[in-house]
Length: 460
Ligand code: URP
Ligand code: ZN
Ligand code: ZN
Image 1 (cartoon, helix red, strand yellow):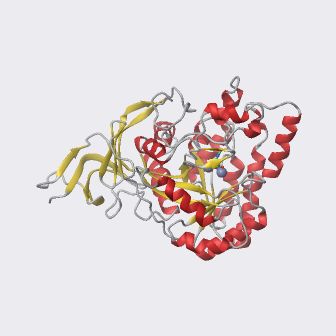
Image 2: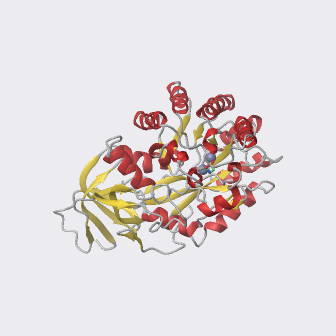
Image 3: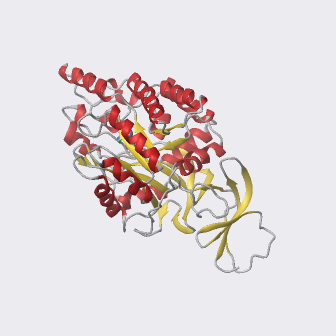
């Protein structure tokens, strides 16, 4: 049995089961999962993972890498972001290919491919982010989906830069359905937010702490309910990105109870960080000027309930990093100009493991489901997200007895802060395999730039 390797003696976790066992790998794929302890596996390289959890490599379906936004560009390129992903146990990212206003969809997509090629260290896919629905744009959807980019994102906020109006969103939904694409939506009522923000600034309330005040929960809930209605009119499925409120979870659950094809994600930070961050002194709140903003405990509780009940199926990072200094340069005197977003791809898995599994809020199998299996299934990553024969051997060896301290000083994200500074979370990523290749050992990246492959995703 040459060319095989086996991770032996671990606990193999799927989205439904936790069993003691071994994982046999051949040519970058999982060949078998079982107990091979007594079999004479001559010539098979054996790696002892006794006491460890073996979980599918994380699938983070919401990142913004090397992406133009709000007058600047996100701080990570494909090499730094995917190294950060890898050391944190994420082996696939699906990144937003942004269409700068005035540019064509296909040319924007090709520009994003060029940014990733030769740099990514883990496998990656793209969503096509539509900010400018010029005449004929929907005619390009078929080619985009056929190229393996089978999802689109639209914004209901940021009028004048990113936002589409309801009619345009309807057009996108209709055409996406015809071409086998899935639409992801950023649901906030942008016009109301713009007015609230203008009032705050007019009253001299210009600091980053007012970002939250301008985006009350109702602005998300209204947009979620409207988007569901528009999706129904277009007879199209819809996926909500970065949900943050109790009302949004209720709206999604209600739609699902009617058997409508509505799905939703939340992000690590909405589950684990609270709006109190905006009460910190000085410019500190700018670290969490991200959209939607952080919420109260009541909303966090509802998000955890939504994950347990299944109305929310995915936890993503919304990794959209801007250094604090860059946020200050652009928005020190007006919170509306602070680039919206924060880092997260590196710590999504461990923060969710620590705050979710170790604290008893979700089971281990649910953790796997939320971080790998459902995101892969939802977005047509047919070879990812499970430790099962035929799937890519993307495997994380997780030490449940270990712990990890998070700090800007040691992180691989190219950032001057992390909102989790000083947190010590239970669990440590001991090793990471991507298509059978060891790419991280004891938190150190040992792979090579450019080894990550573009993954063509299946249409709906
Ligand atoms: O604050 C955020 N989330 N920025 C990134 C853009 C987006 O809306 O996902
Ligand atoms: Zn968004
Ligand atoms: Zn985002």
